[in-house]
Length: 548
Image (tube, rainbow, N blue to C red; front, side):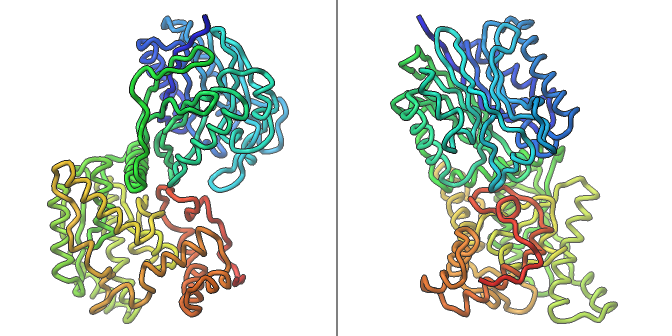
């Protein structure tokens, strides 16, 4: 009788760590075997990590990945796991290289020490964060095979997001289960879109679908897992955990599917998803790049409070070093709020006053006005980078997306850092996340970490007497609404104005956004959580006279 116990394996590979990723695949396969699985499915490019970008244009890299696939097949037999089929993603050399690209993004079915079947990604995305058309050669074959009395098809990520190609011909092969390998980065609400897509594939092609996604942070991308299994009629059988490695086991007889363990997850709210994406993105960037600790400036404001709390959740408060750097303009409540936050989190806390240092520069360079204000921010940047160099910390910058959009930061000052945890979080969302994190702490009986005063007080850079952000910017509710229209939705100025915004405010905001492109180009990377993040998503020329 046809039967498989499928293990959907959410793995967290490290790009380029082929031997380490191979070891993780073997470990997860062994764990799945102990639970009775006879087919284990991994995500896209799980041998090499993803995205590999231009690494895959190096012949030595592709050869190493191909050897790893062969070694995996042999090692499975050696460990007594040869009767378990493993579906794995890796690049392979193409017989039809196209200039820059020499390899295909492929899936392999390993069984009894051999490659039973293979498939190469047909649709190569070339939008948003993806540059696959630059790096890979497209495949053309239909990846169909039979094993354990069941007919399977293979697909890779983008193949099910686009019309046509091999996926559109799955039905004609009477496929009972389609195995989709994915490296689908997190965005807010993308989990709903994926489920709709998988259900559409199942119903149109009359096939059950196992959609396995990677998990983990890779530079500015976060993969959230959230793997999906549906029957041919679109019934959701199971979903993997979000933001965690996982094994989901399904029994399948060619028609019916049964969840082996309780794994259907209810949809988490957006703030929970965003917070966990930011935490995972920071944790993996720190750990995968060999850092042990982070350092950041604690101003007493909402942005640094949220970043410090994300860091404490990601790597433990004992590895977070907060530095208060008051100037003569710093208010007592700001200094107090920074200290209270550090005490609530249990992170390291130190005060380094900058007034005497600033005076030396002002005197020697005869500075005043804006130059003097920016000097304060740059002095703080120097201190943080000096501590980073001295103690090996990763410096975190605390700017949010709204500030980044309009250039409301000092280059080489408060923008200094190696990673920007809230780079893709607009200011109004920073406040919302702070309230969410405090409420979550309260719900589990812990002390809310972020001081109420940091949430309630008007935001200020405190670079001059009685300064607030709204001296220079519109109210953040208005600013974020205009930025959503101009940046996220890519609407023109006249269209934004016609939707009800003040013409002068719109023109001012748009001019600030356009003028700040040079700053953004030099900024630190940070986790992408929206569909239009600065950096990989939104790419505009610095020298640009177009207004519209």
